[in-house]
Image: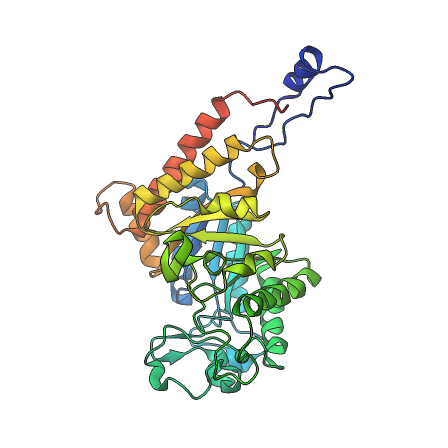
Length: 377
Ligand SMILES: [Zn+2]
């Protein structure tokens, strides 16, 4: 980690500073990105040994220092055994992952989708299967025809009793001071058919749920991470309804605490949204998926913004990068090893995205370390 060297600060004070014009020393914007993350989708516990090996050997070599592990209901929750999915992880299995990450100096962050993503295709997730009364659109959309994913109702009086139990237990078993709560692509919110949310401001409803989860996690000294798409106006930006919001939630950006971490995902291009979140006061991580060219552009953007803003409050907020994988994690590990020999197709590969992103980060870090620090005025 490089910061403005002490002797350089002293030199500045001697040559530039006068008693009536105090010289501020540059804030410590490190050449090395604080967050260099990989996100893995839940995999069957039978693949765990392969992932442990990947964590211990491959990730440190690439420079990964954060692993976001989507667990959802695939853990043997003691607080809510009725919500445990098939093929769930045992406590001992998660502890082996915790130990592997610690050994590899990787911060492990569990991901539990809250609010949205409560179903996939025709199947509802455990929460709405066991507690159908929590469904924002209870009784509607048979077989989930005509919707993307179900949401729970943030105003149901009993839903947070359950959600808090899950989040508290998962933070404890993962021994993590951060939990990623998803909250991307929430299309069903403030629905006219919901007796509790009908007619309410969708931005306020979304912000209310962020605040509720954030405040609970804060009592456990756990920081909230989440996807950023609902905070971006999909119409104004032209980014559309997926990586932006076209359902009136974007004003929520001004209604939530600034201490949450925004995971700003863009898979097809590298728009200037990390700067937007930094201007608004948030720590932000830019996230790519399966287009290596986009991943490299995003890394370059983060490094450029950190350098350009080294002397104001925004530079340190550009935390870093994340490569996401939305396929099977064990196959991803194999594909990464294959990609290191450059024998897989260039486009549409999350493994190559990961490899190229981290090559780029290592290169950009070396360049940043070789540049002289810019003194503050
Ligand atoms: Zn509702």
